[in-house]
Amino acid sequence: GRQPAFLLGGGGTSFLPVLEYANKSGPWDGVILFTDGFAPIPRLGIRPPVLWAITAGGLSPATSMYQALPGLQLKLREGVEKSNIFGV
Image 1 (spheres, rainbow, N blue to C red):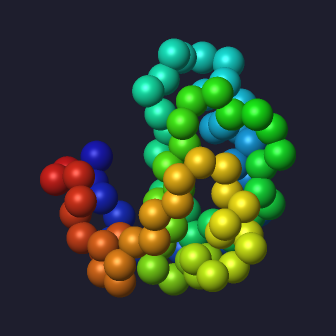
Image 2 (image 1 turned 45 degrees about the horizontal axis):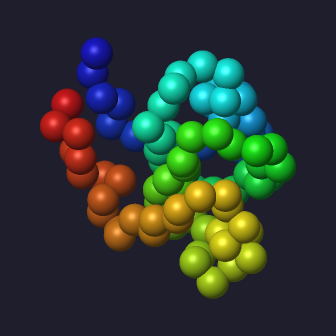
C-alpha cells in the first residue's frame, strides 16, 4: 500500500488490546509501540519485553506517566516520525 501523507490521532487510545494479544500469543522477542504516550498506562503483567518509542511531541521523559510505562522508553527526535525509518 501507499504511505499516507499525514496522520492525525483522535484520542481514545488503549494499549491493552495489543499487550493482551502479545501475552496470549507468541512467543515474542519483544513488542515495540510507536505512540505519543497519551493514554492510560496499562496495569497488567506483560510477558514479552516492551519498547515504548515516544514521538517528539509526545510525553516528556520528565513526567511520571513517561517513567511509569512498563519496559524501556525511547524518546524520538523531532523529524524521526516524519522520515521513512522502515524504508517502505
